[in-house]
Length: 203
Image 1: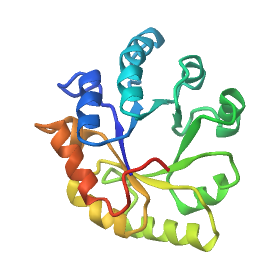
Image 2: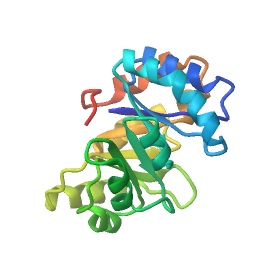
Image 3: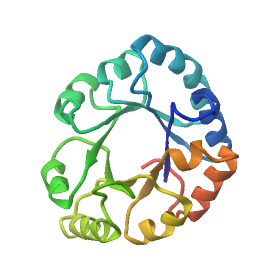
Image 4: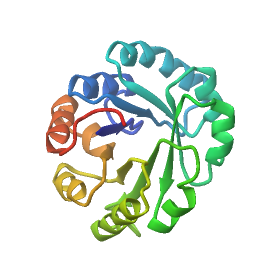
C-alpha cells in the first residue's frame, strides 16, 4: 500500500498533487498542511473530497481530529504531541481510520491495545532515523506477538528504499517529498506502487 502525504512546500499545488497521485494509482491520501488555518483546510477539503470520492481514495487529515469529524473525512493521522488515540476515537466514533506515529518496537507494544488502524513507523532516512534493522525487529515483534495492525514506513523515502523496506516486512510506505518534488508526480507514484510487494489496497 502506498500512502501519499501532501506537501505544501512543493511547487505543485496540493489539489494538483492529489489529482496526479491518484492518476498514478495511489488510493490513500493524507492532507498535511500544518501552517494552514482551519478555513484554508476546509477550502482544500471542499476541492479534494469530490476528487477522492470519485476515485475511491481514502482522505485523511493530519492531526486535526475535530475538524476531520466536522468535514466527515475518512480519518486522521496523529503525530507525537497530538491528542491520545483513545481521545480521538471517542471524538470520531468507531468508523473513521486512526493512524499513529511510532518510533520503536517498544512503543508498538505500548499502543497495541488502542483502537487504531495503522502505525506509521519512522522516521526513515532522517536525523536519529529508524534503520532497516529497526524495521525488521519491529516487524518480528509484531508477528511474534500476533499484533494485527498494519505498519507503514514513513520518512524521506525514495524509490530505492522501497524494496529493502518491504523486505523488512512493512505493509506499506508513506511518501511525500520524493513524489511531490518529482518532475511527474503520476509517473513517480506509479513507480513506487510497482515496487511494492503487496497489493495497492487499503488495509
